[in-house]
Length: 158
Image (cartoon, rainbow, N blue to C red):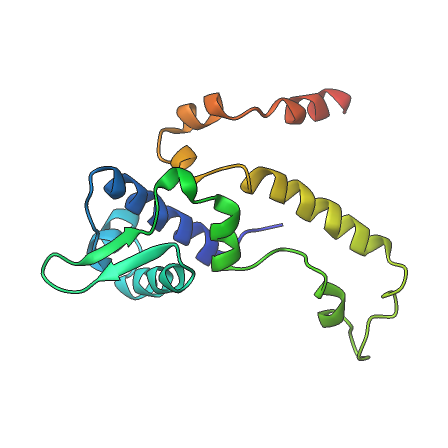
């Protein structure tokens, strides 16, 4: 399972804007582009998607740029991922993966759908409990805030 480049770069752009928010500063497209090493075209596209999704606001003019619509601790990563790319699995999943026929032959009873639902629930339990603020520090800071004990328990079972 992979997250898209749009989701990864979008979160990286938001980290830059989260740091700027703490300094009460707006960032321009060139500033975000340079900070993250992505093209201005790509940065503009990502910032537009995030603005349309209600996560960013923009102001034109000499002192303009992009800012967060609310504090970083009020922006959940699950919301960001939904704006940037949508959920991995939702109820319409089986309607769009039907092959050569209109509706999947396993629509009524499908163990694969159950698997995707379990995976989506696990992802949601992480990303809906992480805020942008959690990602603004160092990697060490992040891991010291987050409890990943269930991952260690899984490794021990193998």
